[in-house]
Image 1: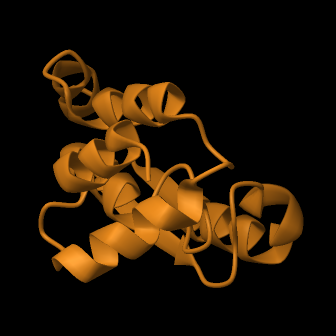
Image 2: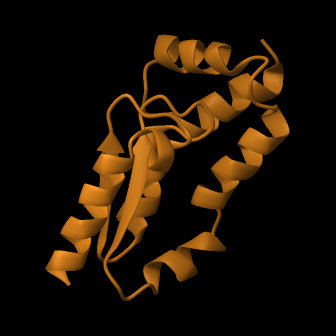
Length: 117
């Protein structure tokens, strides 16, 4: 397994047991470049993103897909937690294109958000 993939798994998913981090990193091998993955992880974790997320004044949802190889649910949860009125919606069985493959679930989450506003 490339060192970069393992490093990203260790940095971005430190709260998970080592065997889960290893499985996750192995599942990405050959599918996602480590540089791209690291950039995505940094976008949810570096100091520059916090002021923008924390200053967002409107309600927001973050749609996550449990099968999304590039952005794990844990990372999406970080974004939702940093939004003052953020809510994570974990779309079961969805990957990266959850708005297309699970359009009904995405629509329902958006409609629920709109009704609450």
